Image 1 (cartoon, rainbow, N blue to C red):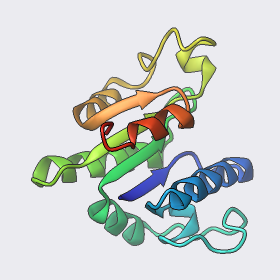
Image 2: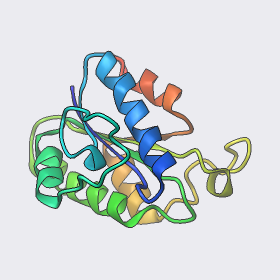
Image 3: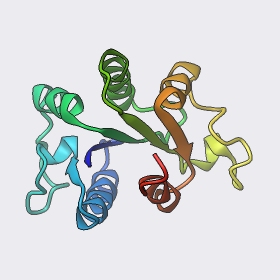
Image 4: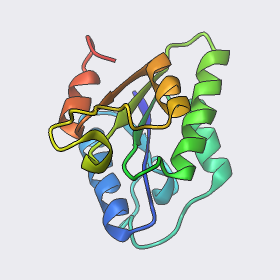
Length: 151
């Protein structure tokens, strides 16, 4: 499966987290594009250099079967929101099956025991995700959704 994996990129640890998730997905046989890595293949030390290219990211969103988006923060990161909007539009316009998986780890939004679930996510973003997938409280649960009977 071709997956675009996105999330907040402003801090080195956030980029490293995304790159580590991408490695896990690649080890499971998926093709993964991460915006800060600049392509479908992971470069050495992918979190140390800015490789973000809008056109490359747009093309990856066009080609992808699934968008996995980290939604952490008081509000969804602006670039993540834009990518969800682009992917949502592409998914509505094409007949092939596409899915969106949101990851919400942020206890400020979801609550310590995930009691708030995704209700704190901006309604437009939440709606776009729920049209083509769901929001999960961690990467492990999202991986289960990638199994053939899942998303």
